[in-house]
Every structure is written in structure tokens, then in C-alpha cells.
Image 1 (cartoon, rainbow, N blue to C red):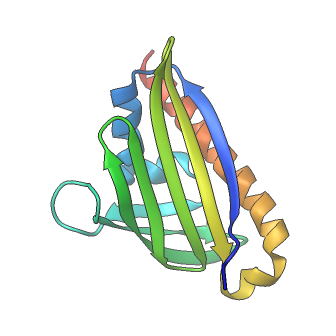
Image 2 (cartoon, rainbow, N blue to C red; image 1 turned 180 degrees about the horizontal axis):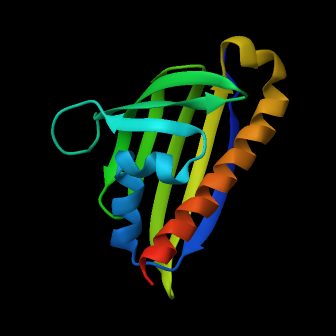
Length: 150
């Protein structure tokens, strides 16, 4: 039986060099600065971040505290950073692809997910809310990075 996942893309252009956007994006300590649903994030594995590294996120969604762990599934410096959850209330795969464009960096992110537990029943609403929250997070990321350049 094949599981159907919800999927959506968010694309933005950030007026900063590709290496700076990538460095900021993969710095988990900064995730709470731009992602409003994350209150704590950190790498839990030893060594530099790369494929197989593990990450822990704590935050709130729909007024409920969540904790999830993720694994880095793709890591190409300055080009690609992907993760998938290994625990938590959602199965979520996030694929970030960066490319140079005139005046900055194009960040294209694909989100694939499936709700678990209490949120499964309201999945269509959850998908809309999740997309809106990730759009806000992307806007915040862009604003922070562009402010650093001034």
C-alpha cells in the first residue's frame, strides 16, 4: 500500500551570495531566529553537518509543544540541504536547493509530509496552516539575511 504525502514548494530569491544563504540555512542554532514554530534546534550528532547527521527540533504547533528528530539526507555545500524526520508528530521531508541568480540566491524548498497522531484527522487544515507557517519562516529567513548585508 502506497502512502500519499502532501507536498508543496516555496521559492524565493534572497539578495545575498549563495554561500552565505547556505551557511545560514544549515546553522541549526539560528533556526529559532527565523522559524516561528521552532523554539530550540541543534545538531545532536558529532562532527560537521552532513549526510547522516541528526538534528533535534523543539517548538509549538497549534498550541501544542512538539519535539522531533531529523536526519540529514542530502548535503551538497552551497547547493542542497535535505532532511527527513525520524520521530515526532509529523513525517516531514524538507529539500532545500540553492542556485545563483542575478543579484542573489534562489532558494527552492520542497516540503513533503504526512500527519501522525492527533493531527491526522484534520490533515487538510494542517497542510494549509503548515504551508503558511513555512512561507512566514522563508520570509523571515530572507529578511534576516538581507539585513545582514546592509
